[in-house]
Image 1 (cartoon, rainbow, N blue to C red):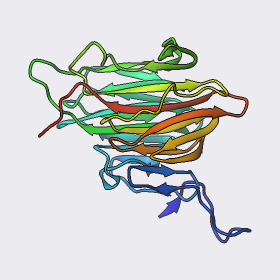
Image 2 (image 1 turned 180 degrees about the horizontal axis):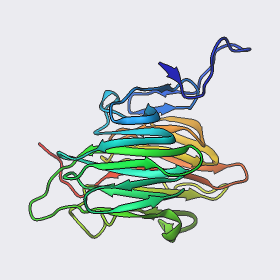
Image 3 (image 1 turned 135 degrees about the vertical axis):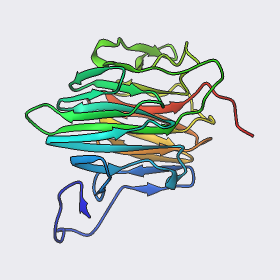
Image 4 (image 1 turned 90 degrees about the vertical axis):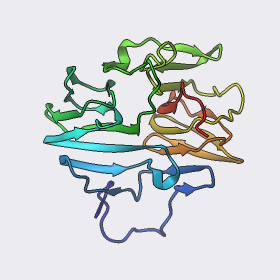
Amino acid sequence: MSYLNGQTGYRASLLANRSVIGKNYVVLEPDGLVKNVVPGYEGCDVTILGSPAMGATFADYLVTVHPGGKNTGIGGNGIESFLYVVSGTVTVKNDDASAELTAGGYFYSPESLLMTFAHTGANDAVLYVYRRRYVPLAGHSAHTVTGNAGDIPYKDYEGMTTAQSKDFLPSASDLGFDMNMHILKFSPGASHGYVETHVQQHGMYFLQGKGMYLLDDTWMPLEKGDYCFMDSYCPQACYAVGDEDYIYIYSKDCNRDVEL
C-alpha cells in the first residue's frame, strides 16, 4: 500500500488531518488517502472514495492514469458506470460508442455494457469514476451518453445567478436513468438558498475553490481535491469563500420510488 500524495517518512510537524467520519457523512481530504490495487486497472493509481462500507449505494474512485495505462472493463452485468476527466486525455468506449475525452469530458455506460478506457495523452490523466447497481423500471432503459462539460451551458440554480449548475444526463426527462451527475458552481460569497434535507445520497468531488459546508449540524471547510459522501437525510448547504468560483461534481440517485 502506498499513499496518493507520495509522502514517505516522517512529517516535520505533528500529524493532522481534516478527514471526518460522521454519522451521516464522510469527508476525505487528499492527505492520507491510499492507492488501492483494483483488478482491471493497469498502469493506474486507484483511490477508492465512496463505497458501501460507508453506507453508499454506489462506489466512486479517483484514478490517475499513467502513459500506457488502461482499464479492461468497468460496469456491465447490472452495474452502470460514469467517467469524468478531471485532466489529461483518455479514449473511452463501450459496445455502443467510442470517444477521446479531454478535461471536462464524460462518458455514461448503461448497466448492460462494459466501459473501458485507455490513456492517449502525453501526461498523466486524472479521472473521477462512478459505479452503481442499476435499479430497473419496467418499460424504460438507460443509454450511452458522452460529451464535454464545456459544451453544456450553466443554468441558474434555484433562480440564483451566482449559483449555477450543469446536468450531464437526461434524467429530468427520461425515467430510464436512475441517477444523474451534476456540476455546481458558486461565485465567491454565494450559497445554497436553504439547507437541503432529502432521501437522495450524494458523492461529491471538489474541482476548484474553497468554501464552508454544513453537514448534519457542523460547518466544515472543504476545498479543491476533497471528497464528501452525504447519506440520506443529511442536512446540507454551502457557501463559497475566497476569490474564485467554488465548483464540484456530484452524483444523485433519482427517478425511483422507495423500496419496502
